[in-house]
Length: 160
Image (tube, rainbow, N blue to C red):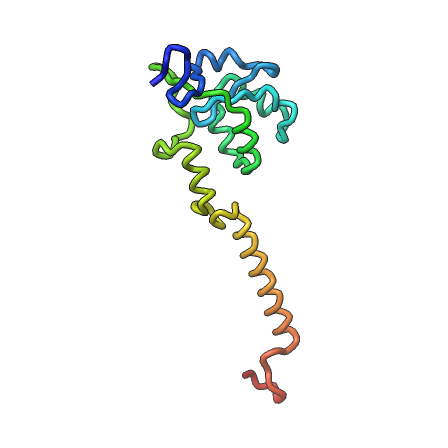
């Protein structure tokens, strides 16, 4: 699938673990997330979680660390802008840190999300869940006020 110039079939540059591990400094740092290679050097100082978070995973597979945090869609867009290639796995390389969910690519997961599938709140990114919780709180408060004001009773004190 790959040609002799280190390009994958899709035209992306291929990197081995040896290549990645050589890029492990703040000024020249690569990370691997879901077998894709990202040049994180330009983002180290801007990372909202602090530079130490990225410095700890430069030159390594950062899939588990990235997914454990639960990054936003905006963070994933920034990540896509840092893409430089794909990981070329060789015999003896470590296994992926997080299962790739049945070989579903990040592109496929993104398309599913755009189509409104997966996750609480459908394609709303969890906003629907918060809206539902807010609606429940408003209804509970309204019911409490209604009952506290004596709602649901006739003049003689007999409940309807």
